[in-house]
Every structure is written in structure tokens, then in C-alpha cells.
Length: 197
Image (tube, rainbow, N blue to C red; front, side):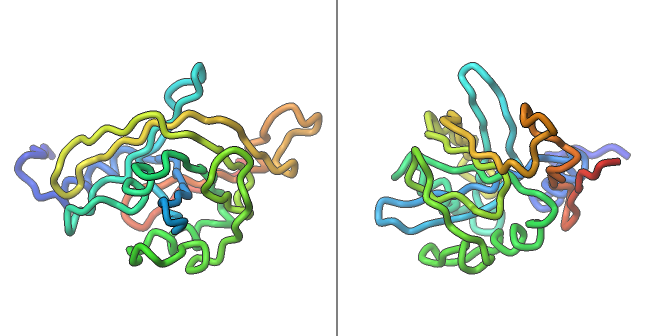
């Protein structure tokens, strides 16, 4: 099969790409606007790109249906701080629920049943249920286009990490992947779950 991406519509293009490029880690990001409205949303266009300085990048792409910018991207324009809450298999249903399109004033922490914890160095709250939280400052944003599905890159520097000791190895020197049970996004409604095997 040969697929010319310029000859298929946006929905088909996104589906083929997301099914092919997988698994993708999930950036479960909390933000706030200047009025204090909190937003919590997952994005699977996300990864670590540098450790010196410690830089992560994620992309809250424009809505494929409306072409509008996501509340997350609008918030970081007003308050350039975020918390990335790393997801595990215990959280997957609630994370999926928080991805629904809610009006700006709706608090996804409440809708999805997550607990807010005050951050140490940034304004947005952390997700208590997440076993790893990265407090970050946004250092740059870059638009990849104006149409529906266009990526809106957010470059963020990790300032500090909060790690639940239950996922550390025996001598508490590093995260134990056999205890963390990371999840990642596949295509459509499918997720990958990391197990000890």
C-alpha cells in the first residue's frame, strides 16, 4: 500500500500517522491562565529533547474540527509555566476523560476526578495521583500552521521533579520501570501499558 499524504483528508492523515508512530509518551499537562482558571489535558505529541538544558517539547495541535487553538496553548501564552504529570496504567481512564473538549471555565481536575497539589516553583497545580511531576517554565512556542491539526510546539525547561518513592528501586537511586507502569498512546482508542514483562 502506498499513501500520498497530500491526497487524503486530515482525519485520515492523522489516523495513519498516529497508528504508525507509536507508542508515544503522554504529556499530561496542567496550566493556568492569568485569571487562575486551571486546565488539565493530555497530549501524545511529546518527548524529552535535551538534558542540558533539560528541555521537553509537546504540541497541543489546533483542533482538527474547528482549527481553534487549545486552551493549554492559550494559557501558556498568558502564564508561561506548566506541570507535566507522568501517567501510569492506574490513571488511563481518568486521563482519557480529561481529554474531552470542555468549555474554558470547566476544571478538568474536577471532571476527571484528580486531586490538585500546590507546586513548588510554578503556578499550575500538580496531579497528586501522578507518581512523577515535572515543574517547568515555558521558554518558547512555535506555530507549525494555521489550519486544523497544525502543531503548536511548546518548549519547556524542567525546573524540578517530584517522584513518589514507591516507584524507586531498592536503594532509591533511580526510578524502577517495573514499578512505574508507564502508559503510552497508540492510534485511535488504543494505549500501551508497560508491564514487568
